[in-house]
Length: 518
Ligand SMILES: *[C@@H]1O[C@H](CO)[C@@H](O)[C@H](O)[C@H]1NC(C)=O
Ligand SMILES: *[C@@H]1O[C@H](CO)[C@@H](O)[C@H](O)[C@H]1NC(C)=O
Ligand SMILES: *[C@@H]1O[C@H](CO)[C@@H](O)[C@H](O)[C@H]1NC(C)=O
Ligand SMILES: *[C@@H]1O[C@H](CO)[C@@H](O)[C@H](O)[C@H]1NC(C)=O
Ligand SMILES: *[C@@H]1O[C@H](CO)[C@@H](O)[C@H](O)[C@H]1NC(C)=O
Ligand SMILES: *[C@@H]1O[C@H](CO)[C@@H](O)[C@H](O)[C@H]1NC(C)=O
Ligand SMILES: CC(=O)N[C@H]1CO[C@H](CO)[C@@H](O)[C@@H]1O
Image (cartoon, rainbow, N blue to C red; front, side, top):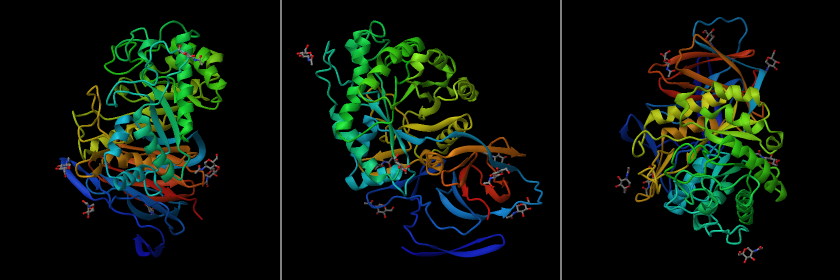
């Protein structure tokens, strides 16, 4: 396709020939929640095109706003910044000072998410998977995969439900893996041009390995680290990796346990296995770490915690103080659910204490209403607000929970319904891309793996402007700006020797990308 586009900005005008697939606009639908969803079906879905030629010394601007835009593209002129003075709010960016290297962004391939995707026709499924993973989508590069069932399943199961099978002779993947998760993962691999990084997380050990003899409620592994209960549970992880490998799917990482505080401090209403930090330290040191090495998975990125940041820095302090345990640990996973209890500074503290151990946001979801709020803007703002806080405090990425839910926010056997960036309507064979999807995409598409966060600082900015700056492996600058106010805000961006002026529209998120001034 060829399209001639005339772009005009302030004092310059030029013609660009876009010689690639065109960007398809959002088909909006208003469900009365203040903003709108974009409707996709078997034959139509909006896209995000970033691979387009732009003139020298221009800034690409992508805008999503509450009132009208979804990844709308425009250009601004990059100027030489010498000898100017500005009275308006300013963001100054410099790559003199660099911070963490970005790992990436993603979501979870739960039983529920993959059942919902598979509830659509194969063409509509492809549109959905392309929206997340394709070159014209938001290009997630991380997928979390629950190891057996969780609340977002239609039933309780593990891969080893035969009591006392300590040698794992009856270990088998479930029909959910074979029929739903693995086919969807394979489609994602086929559509992505990135190296997708998968990490597995278990919710419950088989009931017979636990003190409670139950997959839910309060309970943890029987006995002590190093015994047959712990060894069997460690072998279970390696068998899971082996079985997925037989299907051609390899994993980048694992978390030791989803929300180890669940089932320990509280009586959990869904699958869980409690661990104190001491229990997790000993299990990693004596069982899981050695089992992974023994079976050829020594390179797996093992993440501890995978729970609320309230437990920082105490939990990693216990685990990582032990050199033998620490040698197996690469990262710390954090969830966002009790963030209101404690600020993002604990991420900073944790990073300063353990600079070689990465911090990754491993789960987040909105649960504001009994069922999904189609088109609600604020749920998207919560996502970008959290992503900005995490990135500005050393997190290397942020991973959402269910990639797709149904109109009820399920299925969830424990009735623990949530919202999701993509909601499937199987009856209509269509799906709805929520504001959350676009907020996430403003990061996932642009802060590609290997980007580094760079220094940025604001002058005279209203407090409801938040931002993060980064430099990609190819040397482009990226700035993401969230405006949560009800007014348009003019901003001057100064980047080393260059600058540009933009307007941050009321209630919007924007991504700016540009190259060094020439
Ligand atoms: C799919 O969406 C497009 C764009 O909104 C619309 O023109 C088309 O009729 C839809 N197809 C079906 C089967 O609803
Ligand atoms: C941006 O605004 C400043 C004043 O705030 C002005 O000096 C500069 O020329 C403007 N740049 C462009 C590209 O309009
Ligand atoms: C595993 O245990 C089962 C039942 O206890 C037994 O029949 C089988 O021989 C064992 N397999 C191995 C490899 O030890
Ligand atoms: C994927 O990984 C391979 C091998 O590590 C590397 O050569 C390639 O550049 C990576 N591709 C992307 C898109 O990062
Ligand atoms: C889902 O699709 C059905 C069938 O087209 C329709 O009646 C229903 O209103 C849709 N639900 C939503 C929330 O759009
Ligand atoms: C920005 O300025 C710093 C300090 O002068 C320099 O080290 C750096 O290379 C510059 N970056 C770019 C992209 O020009
Ligand atoms: C959300 C947000 O940052 N809103 C700000 C946008 O800009 C206006 C005008 O400066 C501010 O008043 C808002 O607080």
